[in-house]
View 1 (spheres, rainbow, N blue to C red):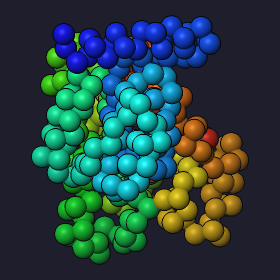
View 2 (view 1 turned 30 degrees about the vertical axis):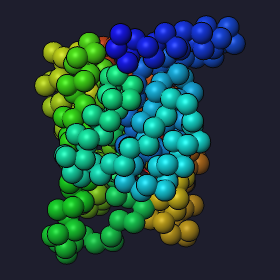
View 3 (view 1 turned 180 degrees about the vertical axis):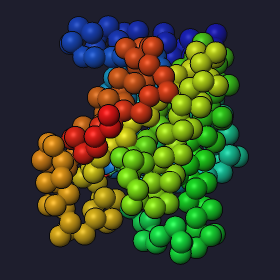
Length: 271
Ligand SMILES: NC(=O)c1ccc[n+]([C@@H]2O[C@H](COP(=O)([O-])OP(=O)(O)OC[C@H]3O[C@@H](n4cnc5c(N)ncnc54)[C@H](O)[C@@H]3O)[C@@H](O)[C@H]2O)c1
């Protein structure tokens, strides 16, 4: 009997209990990897997926943060030390996931250099820094997707959500926006390349969201003008993104692929 079959059997009773209590369990017996899930929005995704029944892999560079989240989730969660900027590391992440849970159904490419991002322009950013930044913020999603696609295909298909940003549509956002705009392109390209494996690839583009990382990036005096520029006049919360991401990952979105969904309180107008 495969590890996946054993997990499925063990979860049947819990699933029945969950349904009796009216709990939404769209990800029962599914396995999801969330990169950068040691805090902020990624942690909220890991908790939401776990809450809906998924086995969750917290794939995080910061060991202390990643372990804290996985330990707190407990049963059905595992921390895997991962550097998404390194394809060997994402290969090891995918292998550890399959070893533990028997397969991979969902991947959320959330990890990024963000809170500690250097303040520089495209014309003066250090090239070594830019190289590492692009390896993590852009290629990280490709590395993790390539590492996971074989297991998804073998399991009959799956879905991927990339974490973009409204910065992708703002000319002033420099190398951060360059990585996110390219991530949108990666999303549509991968959607086409992976559809025949029954793997869907979408992205969400959060607007300004109240996390420790955002608070490092945006000085206090800019917060209020930023909030006033939104149609819905408050910052987003990590929880605001969970519904949209779980929807895109789930079968409810079974004919949606290559889409970038703005979840931004009306920050961006695209016509
Ligand atoms: N907070 C916002 O306003 C906002 C808006 C738009 C988009 N985003 C995007 O949302 C995501 C999460 O943002 P956040 O605000 O929660 O920030 P965050 O800094 O808390 O989250 C990023 C996580 O990625 C991890 N990470 C960094 N490099 C990594 C690597 N090489 N391998 C694995 N993990 C790595 C970090 O340790 C951290 O836990 C990022 O992709 C960010 O660009 C955030």
